Image (cartoon, rainbow, N blue to C red):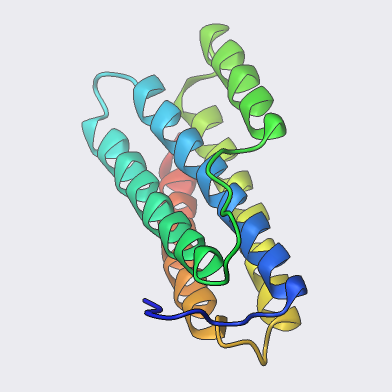
Length: 154
């Protein structure tokens, strides 16, 4: 963690703010997905809650970096993320099942990975690079776990 003001350029702060919001959306999505998993799949629910916790931790790290730059960090997810979660709940209510939940989780992970990859390209010289790189590695691991589960689902 940063103990003093970092003096990141405005473009870096914008990236950190956007990634914060995406992590919050992801956290909220995984929490809802954990609630929508069938009762016979506690390990999937546990995985989703673990990933939600990881996303919350990542959002807090990014918020801390933004705050250490005398900026107000984003604390809420996006409207688009809330609309997507409502759509997922509707699809689940209509019988989407776990395969649909896994497919959407995988799709969300792909989107978040792409955003991190672009941020890493844009912020290669930024002092926040190591933090973003570590987030990306964790994201890649959770994405692979979801892909493995999706491939194993009949």
